[in-house]
Length: 393
Ligand code: FES
Ligand SMILES: [Fe+2]
Image 1: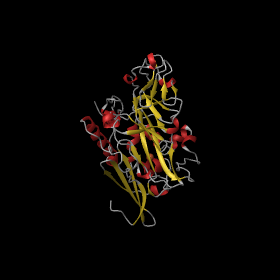
Image 2: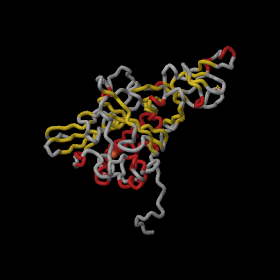
Image 3: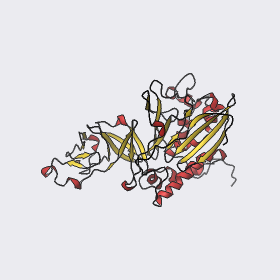
Image 4: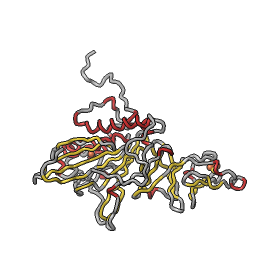
């Protein structure tokens, strides 16, 4: 039979489970469970229980009347109805069926139908996960108790002046809804895909970012013990160099200094990909800014439209990150890819993630975790740096 490359008879493709599967017990899912993840906005934790999904697990988020957020499994440990219909009280959430009351750490505080309202309350515990609030986001740790890392803080959000604030940017990358129907890893590795900026965001869709980003750069990637960074150097017409650094941090963090170049110097923002499940991803982003400034410029398409104003046909004329990453399918087929020279950054992100999957499978602690609760904040390196002359790397 002649193989002239036509589509007939091709094999079904497959994905690499060590990159994409997020469920409990899967190798990648166990790695992800060693880190804190943003799971909701703090305003979504209220006295009305909310169903959320994190790493393929269905959970109930609530906030007690005393202000403490809680995250528990839906199925009541008594006889299994859902706490989605529960009543949130001062100290916890009360199951609607027989009234057992659970604290935010799952302890059972009351069993109103039992003798003495429960003589052995310590024997019962609703499955729960710890949460931390950080700049308007709720983070959760879904891993083993004895391997729980300290909650990481980041230098760009420390020491705010009175006229500064940290706010949530609620959209997908630079345009699109914050929740996308595709696997998280294909949204994540995009941040080390430096070359798509010129093709997708410039040549195909017209300039979506600052015109200085249209200048072809020297690109290099660096592997660190916390992730991968990418340097892009552009000689500017005035003889200076724009040294733009982006970074990914294990496991789901990406730091993309604003591509509108409205902020020079160190990045003012960072984001996380939350794997909701294998085929759904939510992006959470925080930005530090003067209170008086608008949060961040978004690409303008066509005649001054935002992503949400585009017709289906206009999305075809002006594709962006959302279209191309969701366009890779619910879970991209790694067996069908042809990685090339320009994909080195993508390869580095994948290799490091898979290395760490194996570290955890072998009983170790993955990179980017610390058990020192009093440790310093993590220092990001990403930014849009203007340098006189040329850079060394
Ligand atoms: S099922 Fe929840 S208290 Fe009975
Ligand atoms: Fe992009």
